[in-house]
Length: 91
Image (cartoon, rainbow, N blue to C red; front, top):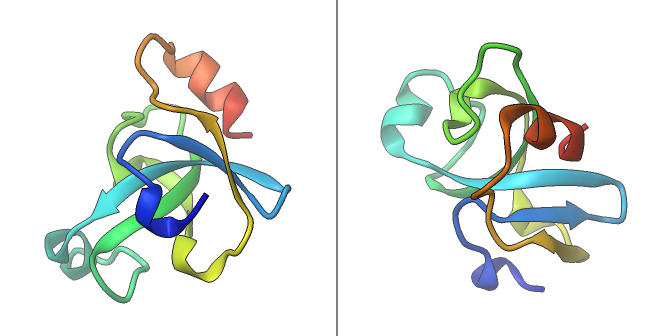
C-alpha cells in the first residue's frame, strides 16, 4: 500500500512492527504543538486512557507515514470498534 492510498481512520501496519491509526494533522494542530512538520496524514498509536480515538491529540506517538516503504492494511476503518478494542489493536 502506498501513502497516497491512505484514508482517515484506517488502521495500518508499518514496517511489520506497529499498528497505527491514520489521522489528518492540520496547521491548527501543528500550531498547538503537534510534533509534525507539515499538514497531512500521519500514523498514531498509544491511545491515552481518557482520549478520543478519532482525534490526533489523544495519542502519545506520531509516525510520518511518508517515510515508510512497507505499509499494510489491517482494517479499512474503525467503525464498530470500542475504545478498548482500538487500544488493543494499537498496542
